[in-house]
Amino acid sequence: MDNSDRGEERPIAVVVLAAGQGTRMNSDLPKPLHKLGGVPLIAHALAAAGSLSPARIIVVTGHEADTVEKTVTDLAPWAECVRQEEQLGTGHAVLQAAPLLADFAGDVIVLYADTPFISEETLAAMQAARAHHDIVVLGFEAADPGRYGRLIMDGDKLLRIVEAKDATEAERAVTICNSGLMAGDAATMLRLLGAVGNHNAAGEYYLTDLPALAMAEGLSATAILCPEAETLGINSRSELAQAEIAFQAARRAAMLDDGVAMQAPETVIFAQDTWVGRDAEIEPHVVFGPGVTVESGARIRAFSHLEGCHVSAGAVIGPYARLRPGAEIGNDARIGNFVEVKEAQIGEGAKVNHLSYIGDAEIGDGSNIGAGTITCNYDGVMKHRTMIGRDVFVGSNTMLVAPVSLGDRAMTASGSVITEDVAPGALALGRAKQVNKPGLAIRLMERLRAIKAGRKG
Ligand code: UD1
Ligand code: CA
Image (cartoon, rainbow, N blue to C red; front, side):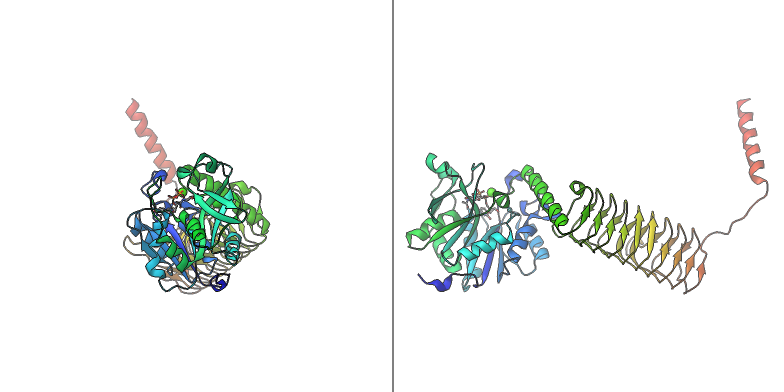
């Protein structure tokens, strides 16, 4: 056997299988796009693939291919997609990548789009096992082997994999099961796949036939085992819900280990890519959508919702705040209750403490935005920006009709509708002038009461 085609340093092509219909999800949305941890299932597989620093990532699509491919391209523009027009089995699916791998000298690792918990350590262990074996399968000891393929081992030799449907009673008693992941030399795997037939209970071309075909050629196959939790595959909404519970539990535990303070971690929802610095504090019932980073020492108060935003050190968000994509909160800034921020930079030490909407805006360091202030950023067709300088004081209930700018140290009077730029240091009054009529309130009330009495009589 030639050892040069084994080992850890070879280029890797990851093939992600995502063509299946996912019938048991009972959904119009293709299974790889159902969300786990705020991101599509396939994002987890792509992240696992990325941890191998692969030379290629090839995603096999089929059911709802256009939609799945669009998401893959958004998530990983460097990934290539290949179609499996008819879903004739996992072996047939991998074979669809053959034209892309014709000249590829390296390893193939097959992942599933619906198996989101595979760890980097497990993938590294599969690679390490490749130093001694031609085909490496990832297996696990199943609590309930059910419909899984069974690994028929002889010592560390993997003789063959038998699908549950095709297994004898004795084979079904085996509890070491196939996760679906497989690694081997690309040319060898594709050559062996050419020999796979579909004479089995499902009438499909099984990827799982490869170990036996390899053994028959005098090549070696083995299985390494990982914890069952890692191999959890999503086939139904109930399994997806279970997976979300497991995902959140793992993320919360990891956050606590990383030094994040949480009083009620069981109430906090994280996304796959949430990043929170050491000694940041997350109060109860905070929800993180995708794309959030929170620096050390920031505080996210109860019932806040954040997505696509960055919170700098010392900032305090909420309670009941909403940070939407493009919100960048500076050091020591304050975003208070019932404040929504979208596509806006909030400067160092700036305050937006109550009941405001700040969208498409820039707020300079040290500025104070009064209660109820709104950036009127949308004219019904286009979005416009509001530029606010440093140490500006915006009076309560100011409407800032964008595009508009307020210079450094400017002020606006409460209740103003600001439609024109305000120069640095200027005070803008954009409201009707108040008129007081002495005694009129009392005379008015008397007249109204007299009218009411007249109607009764
Ligand atoms: C497969 C394995 C089984 C293993 C189990 C682990 C085979 C024959 N069986 O069974 O040994 O225990 O996974 O979960 O491989 N797919 C395609 N094209 C196809 C068929 C499937 O892309 O033609 C994709 C699916 O989208 C999915 C993955 O391959 O991501 C697995 O397919 P699935 O039908 O769920 O395989 P199982 O029957 O669960
Ligand atoms: Ca499955």
